[in-house]
Image 1 (spheres, rainbow, N blue to C red):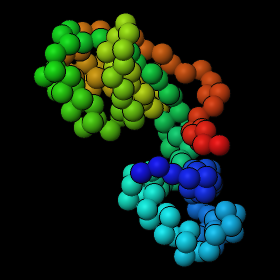
Image 2 (image 1 turned 180 degrees about the horizontal axis):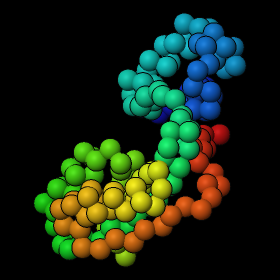
Image 3 (image 1 turned 90 degrees about the vertical axis):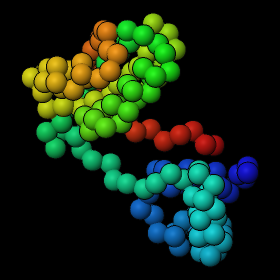
Image 4 (image 1 turned 180 degrees about the vertical axis):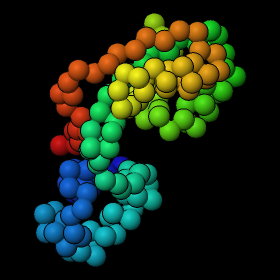
Length: 153
């Protein structure tokens, strides 16, 4: 099912202001509260809206170091991919994990307290994942932009 201009406006507002009241959202897009609520239910049912949540300050929670890790597997077979993916999904330290095309197989995003915590994560978690042959780590020095909304307009 495709979405129209009003649906796009609703999604754009929601991803920027997730706590907006339904009444205010309806006013912004020129619909009644009931029509807005019905559209939100449809957008959720159809998978355009996948959830709601709060954005937390990682630094305040002792997770100030952001790292990206390239992972190269020793074999690239479906069973190795499946086992690696299962391990990544189970590890709470892995915030995001992407299978990529190019010079390595996976890109992992993780947040840790400091370099010592990263060393522990690398040694006790990441290197224990099935099939890991090699890793390359990139520590982030400055977060220029994060949590950007999708360009819907």
